[in-house]
Image 1 (cartoon, rainbow, N blue to C red):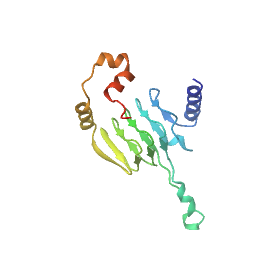
Image 2 (cartoon, rainbow, N blue to C red):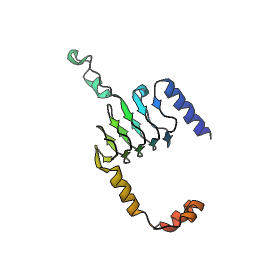
Image 3 (cartoon, rainbow, N blue to C red):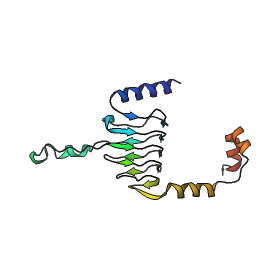
Image 4 (spheres, rainbow, N blue to C red):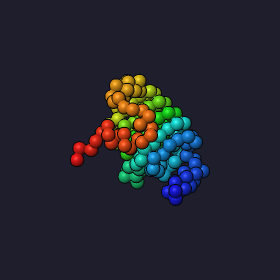
Length: 167
């Protein structure tokens, strides 16, 4: 309860600082939104799993900015997540990327370039591995037969029966 209140308070404060996030987004834990949250746009019906990191600037430029030629170099970029996306646990989103609508980014992926709409991407760096439709079909084909009523009555008991622990 208190944790949820703190998360809502922090999120409202970040929105006042310029974070753009739709009301129906689901945050599992609080993502690391970096120091320039005004460069982050998150669309409708987006789920962001825990430990996701948004990096809106390249701080590495500080290493050479004391040299006259590079004094004014900065590297910032907006991060845009369009509607109806899933961002997996532990992902890192780098400056200047866009994740197209209806896309899934696999856990621990590092997104270095744009992900097109209706795509599933994963890896380091993240690459598109299939379309959303192919992913949906693969998930359907891998779904075991189960008693839907029992599942909704007691999800944990049903999942334990279907997938017993090996130890």
